[in-house]
Image (cartoon, rainbow, N blue to C red; front, side):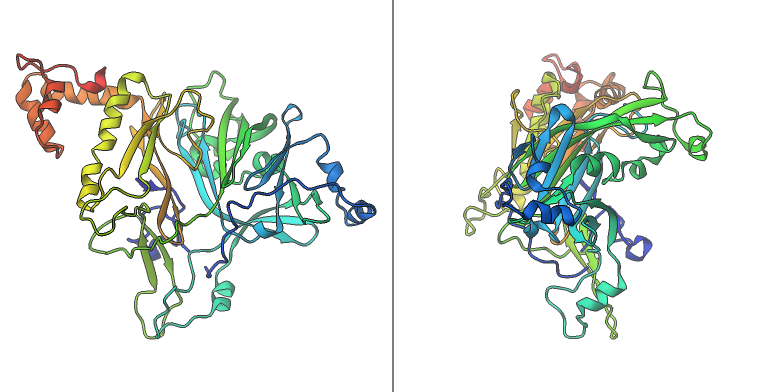
Length: 479
């Protein structure tokens, strides 16, 4: 599966940084406790609201008046009817690494705007700034000091900080600060609807080059807070297209929408702490084996040597019995089949995923992967960072038959979340290919196809492809 974190440093890191990846600037401070739920602030004591107003801030109790609080990693205060929501941030959550994941929950079926496709993954920090501002910052984790510093390499955090800048995306006004707890409130609508934190316009310039977000047709969708993450939906209305701007000359012509002057996209934002499983140890990459990596650069040594540290991206699997040659993991990798996947393909998808257990057995793990069906009444969204989901999409002009984004902790290479998006067009493609190669040759070709795919010839597989008289049947994916 591919990592969707942004590529860094360009050709200077090639070929190791050819794959999209986020890489760690300084030894960053410990993460905020994901279990430390923020709680709504209480009404301020007498005399303190006037002090807040003198600082240009509104009194806390008046700011959250008539809003319903929802506790979690961050506290949400919302009034869905008024399309108003505030995000509460505790002082201990400032300057901590957070993972912001943006996913397209709805698309237009062309030009890269497909349901379930990733938009961007960012490690961000929230930093308090003068004039009652809260900055949203992408820390420069491409450069940092190694954990185990070799004797011939200097270690000067200030040198790195002064040599390589962080990226300040924007600053949001702090609306109010609780006089006792210090909890800060920001406008979630301003954050998600006006500021484009995931840079969706930059991620899809071919489709959105001549469009801009229309505030009149944009609004907040579903908002949910959990102990380790906050799930937020933004419905973005785009207007434009067909204008005289330079962008329109190089933008896609959208044929799937009834009127190209406007359309809407639902974007799911998942904001979570940047966790690390206890005992997880980063594994150095071996240049002899190509693999997805998380890399960073250390200070250059005067005596030479490779300044880059490269970790492979891997799941945090641990054996239940470390002494056994083959042991189940303490926590298996669980993939959920989305409800949108047609019923007739679910069994084949499940079997295909479970085949990967054979590869994990060679690494000493039995039943490393489990496949479960998403309940029809699930109270979680497929884009929720807590779940690995096999998703289904339909498109007018597909760009790919499938996509496998994964999200990793860029400091360690630990895989935190992975999804698989299958486009409905894959069914037609596989059916056509199968019929082309096996229509006239029957079971003999079916056997060869299985062997070419690396699968041992098994009766249960061949039975799917042939009838009792040896004639070729429709493949399983054809229904």
